[in-house]
Length: 160
Image (tube, rainbow, N blue to C red; front, side, top):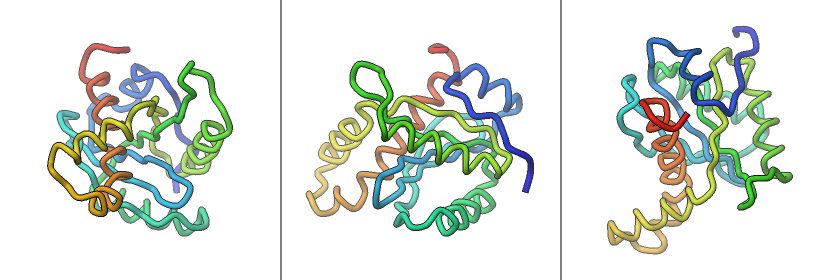
């Protein structure tokens, strides 16, 4: 694949790396699953994708590469689990390491604050009157969509 790509927490840097936009793939990295979400090339709306069972990195990477090809993805957004005070802990470091490993795909990567993403996703699923069992199946991808929507809202205009 291509050389290692940009990894940043700056929406402006990420946007500059993708001057023509393009479809994005967001990841909500859990210990057992990876929630995915996609957005359109114009960065208007995010939609939940599949929830992948997390395994060894090589297997995860193969699944993600297939999704990237299938959707012509131009950039990745990875949820960065910050502590409530904004500091980073072990989970943040794990997400950063995952991003470094994925940088070999050659796509720009935006690390996006995911605080409250699961809470927001849960509220949305409850508002849809979804059963607890069904919410459990969809929460990770719904959280990835919340992460991605926050990122594309920033990319589209205001919160750099």
